[in-house]
View 1: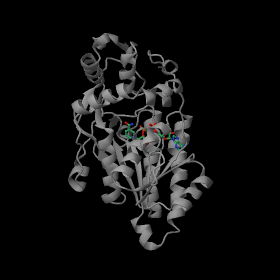
View 2: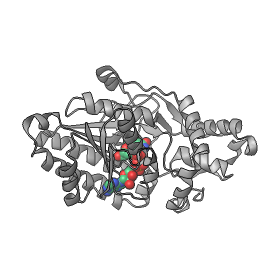
View 3: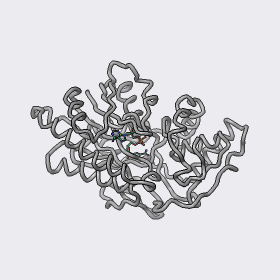
View 4: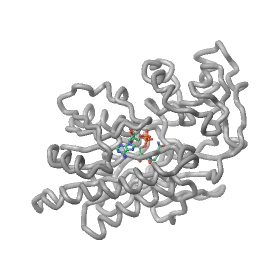
Length: 351
Ligand code: NAD
């Protein structure tokens, strides 16, 4: 199987590329522009592997993408390339519109040009999986779960741009008959997560003795999924999902942000007692505008139709994640200059 993975030098993409090569024995072409969030070190495990190729390409570059399609001849495309940080989208949305909407349009068109040259049998077995977020559904109240039929109601420039890209992907299936599927996943966590996101930021600021910034009162709820569970789901959906369908991906691990941060602090209290109690570093900062109150996923369709289930509990996954950051400073230290959390209004300075 030959799989093109866009955004494969990012957090989820690199985990997916490693999985496809190591666990599935597939041949992978990673496409990535290498923005501030793209990191070749995340692909170190497959560097030089005979089944892995890397091309630094912006998905908006139709000519280069056309050449990549022609040269690699993928049987499957899994599209993860995106601008992904909500706070950055609030500070400036242009790159989100450009990559997430315009870039997805260009990628769909590059894929369609290539797909239209295939013979009927290959056209039928080709798959394009567009990877998206549960944030497109907006916010939940105290109860209820997002299902695949929940109406779109995005709140941030990021989620609005992802919502637009989902609609484009679905339209390319309905209009042109291209074999497209869409997945909408809850918040991921795990190794190789860029240090600007809540969980790695908390771990790294905690061990550096810095403030642990939490928006509002920390009572916003997210549904956390270990990244390795997500990439198994992507593989299953691309393999056995029904063309034109959407699949929600989630692990039934709802947690308030404050509880996530306190859990990390108590793990650190155990494993690195030097600065304990780490929870003393928690600082509440003014809330993010348009901050969705609660996300939670109903993944019944994926579980019952395709037999996928999340395997990692939050308790074990978060321990593994903390341990990974403590053991892998080689990976996160060089990224420290790539972002500036102070500029984004967070109270914690860049690492
Ligand atoms: P990430 O920011 O870690 O990685 C995104 C990657 O895309 C980076 O390597 C970046 O260099 C690359 N990229 C950006 N613009 C590009 C362009 N124009 N051309 C080519 N490459 C480009 O993001 P992530 O957290 O790994 O998320 C991957 C995908 O999964 C995104 O589409 C995101 O919306 C979706 N998603 C993420 C989560 C989550 O919790 N992280 C949850 C659900 C869905």
